[in-house]
Image (cartoon, rainbow, N blue to C red):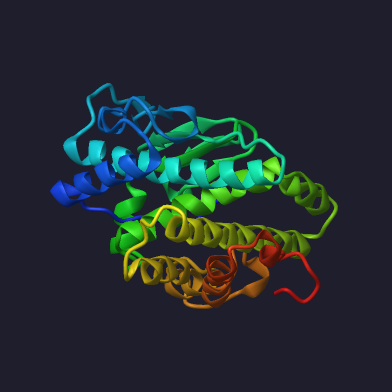
Amino acid sequence: GGGGGDGPVGGRGGLGIVGVLVILGLAYFLGIDPRVILDQTGGGGGGIQLPMREGPREANRPLSPEEQELTQFTSVVLKTTEDIWGERFKASGQTYTPPKLVLFRGDVDSQCGMGVSQMGPFYCPNDGKVYVDLSFYDDLKNRFGASGDFAQAYVIAHEVGHHVQTLLGISAKVERARSRASERESNALQVRMELQADCLAGIWAHDAQSRLQIVEPGDIDEALNAAAAIGDDRIQRKTQGRVTPDSFTHGTSADRVGWFRKGFQSGQFSACDTFAPGAI
């Protein structure tokens, strides 16, 4: 499940000194040695892989300063999801196995097939990894008009939401149902999957505010703006000039905003049952 439909989603210009201070503050709250983050040797989900590809060839080059900042930022966001979902799973008597993060440019091999930047960020349940093309940060800002750190963090939290669905067995059940369904019904089930991931991203934001105190004024607006920007109806209207609901795979802008808001306001997994009759 990708965060942004048919195109890459993202937008980031660089953290600068303020961003580095934010990282150091997060490291303090999360109990991380900040050198681990700043040196890129740590990261959520047990590590970061950086197969920096550009087109079909390996680009054996060091990361640029901007890419280093993007890596640091994404690493910290993933670490917050690891802590938040780890606590929630522990409270219900379960063990949370965090996903690994793969950053790339251009294309990347995954156990779900070849990933390209046009897909946007995506999660592969076959290998338990979140794949993020670094260019998606720029696209979210420049193409979709959704800027800000928290807008970018929302997209990462959405992909982690798919990992949570996989761990809970939801993904497998939906895939079995989709294999027996018509194309229209399959798309409708996928929409419910994506909206639930939005709701789970809202739960992450709820806990980021209540437990970690890292949500600042305006952050939630950034996330809601990002959710609205990558709704199927808005993307279709922009790219093809018309809206075809039967081909939706992620949900309308209003639905994406609404389900993220449900997760954020309630902080309850029970509020994220997008599969209930009449939920959508």
